[in-house]
Length: 305
Length: 108
Image (cartoon, rainbow over all chains, first blue to last red; front, side, top):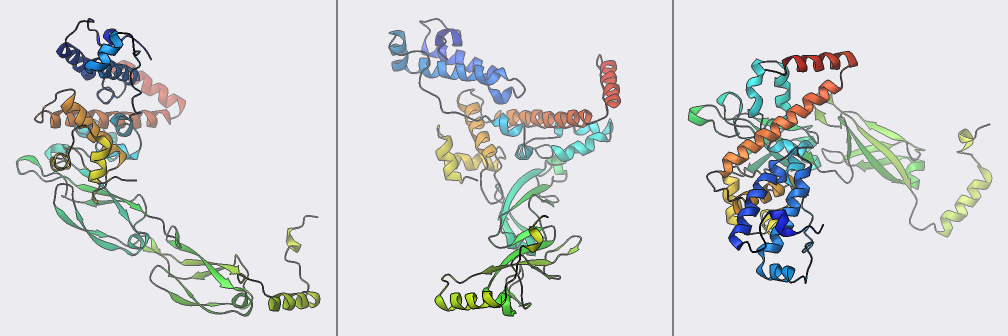
């Protein structure tokens, strides 16, 4: 966009640097996108104002523009994502949004108490209480499923012992009563909300309170059966693989899942038969011999007639 | 993907220092996660505070006033959006009733 920077800022061509700054400030206050969350034009207006100011605020660039050496587009500005894009949408925007602007609406309709859940946070809490604050905490998979206690340092310098209950799931929010912003004039403090993000585990997959694991077994273990060690969320356990177990077969280890709300889950172990890295001549000749005498068709059920 | 204090200072640039960032956190202007990590919204907010102070010449006394009003506006916008979505999800006749009630009450 190459509009004349002087007209964008509304200044004369002989305007002093101070006039340019003043004009820029006045327009920036008016058009900054974060101060105009609902105005779609604000962003393009503000960008044009910024480009014009960049050019006219730099005496060298301004002189070159006046001599016609460079055009009004100026230097390409890095793409900037404004605060309003985050504050206005998505769960992350809830972090700073304050419900103080309609906390008294509760008297008007009970509907609004549900809305507080959407816009909790911010500095002033409802009814003079200190404000609620929201934090985010990333947890390892095992700490979340087994429960853990964590000493965390809040951004304001306070330390807090946080108890993560067993079975905490990704996206869950822990409420710490009275750990928010202290209330003014001796009023009670707000609450702190800690939103938990659980890191995925390389081996364990959680579905409700059940834990899914894929267990590689050798060819001989699959054929002959035997005891193998299986990782669970509370440590390895010994499991008997039945004789003749195929890939895809699932064993259920009752009560070895997550001890969460709504009971204890199971661990589901899905068997995966893994051949040796090298098929040696021993195995090959054995299989050839075996095949000749014991043909079988595992795909019999997959054919449509 | 969260950023550390130092990474935020390097990303935002423009005169912000670690010491200043910590003061803003202490005053509650910016609130990173409990593990000290900054999300994209925190970085955008740091950039906003920088802009308010440097270009718009909002002084440190007025910054919390501006932020508090902004947080309320964004909170109201979110609340209003949720309300609008809730109305939108209603059957046609309920939406018509709401629209009529809005017209009737609109003039106060």
